[in-house]
Amino acid sequence: MSLLRHAATIAAKDVRAEIRAKHAIATLLPFAATLLVSFGFAFGPGRDVLLRTAPGLLWMAVLFAAVIAARRAYQIESEDGALEGLLLAPIDKAAVFLGKAAAVALQLLMLVACALVLVVVLFDLTVRDPLVLAAAFGLGAVGLAAVGGLFGVLAEAARTREALFPTLVLPLVTPVLVAGVRATDLAATGRTDEAIVWLGLLVAFDVVFVSLGVLVFGFLMED
Amino acid sequence: MHDLHEKHARSTVTAVELNAVTRLFGANPALVRADVRVSPGEVLVLRGPNGAGKTTVLRIMATALSPTYGHGSVLGFDLVRERDAIRRHTDLMSDRTRLYEDLSAAENLRFWCRLLGVDGADIQAALDRVGLLEVAGERVRGFSQGMRQRVAVARTLLRRPQILLLDEPYTGLDAEAHHAVDDLIREASRDGRAVVVATHHAMQRGLADRVLFMDGGRIVRQGEP
Image (cartoon, rainbow over all chains, first blue to last red; front, side):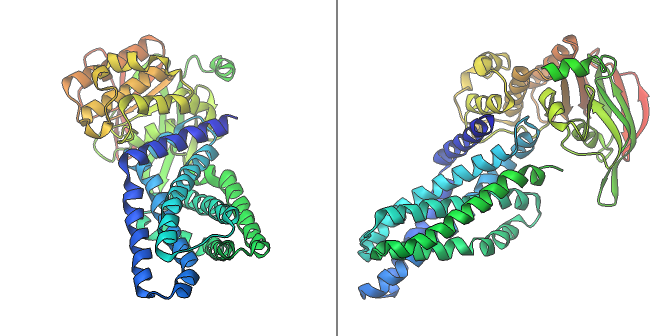
């Protein structure tokens, strides 16, 4: 229980700091809005093209957001040596991973909610199965946050951290991107049966990377 | 606390012990065959130029670094095999204060109290002791280095660690913060807790018990303060 209590303490601290600093949101919302609006204009008034591209654009925005939010989650630990404080605190280090990942996932879901409103308004997207859509973004956010939480600490130790982090993370999250786009597309068109397969892939990805994080994060933090 | 009592029987004479400890970074030695012993209640000062190995000694004692060669213990716990036990009773304080800029002083202390398993009921009293009660609710972002250091002192006051490790604790401090650090050391020593301080600054007369002079990663001599 102390593992979850410590993870909740770390997540609450990260969310509180982000709400005050508005660092990730101030970076991500303009990016998502620009991406969606500019592609909306670029593809012209043809509704079919817009609807076909909307899921991909949405997930591109979420992916970019995940990279920014996960980097930021560890940046605030490095600014004044807090990461060493977490290392030396007498807690299970998996709590740091779970807390960081939870905070990043929450931020991603906030961004998804805003971006969805934009897509519905700009692209006139109708979602026939909102439950599948919610599941796709929920599971996708957890997967992206888990990978970001795991590799964020590795990248923080490297001198080339700004380049290293996306290099490590982006190839690994390709399954999330593919499954997320497919599930979103199928949710929009109401083909729930087919979406289950892609949601299953997202569940498997989450289980693997959350478990991996819990098991190895302590080793990654130690000298 | 049971584990501490059990080990304490073995460590009443020596709170911290390093035996021929060497630490390499790549091929570069930061510390070479260091032998250090600190007794409970003793205030040991490490002196030496930049790169002498003072910080490496403290970080090894705090278990932030492992020895490459050699072995040692803190309160009877092995430096490598029993890191978690050592971390429960040890606090490393440096000029990097581990505070979050967008949280207030009180919120920072509350966060660390929860993680360190410390009762947070005395946060206001601790901030009062370091003269920061009036700014307890303000974000740390606007604090000077001296004020940040005083928040860190308040955190250590709340924690009351058995082993207090201070790395250049006087850097960038005003007179008031300087006194707060001195009080912290004096109180720890009086309570029988061991203190190791790495500093370039002259310390108040009577505060230190012993000085180790370091150079090039080696302990070159021992002296009176």
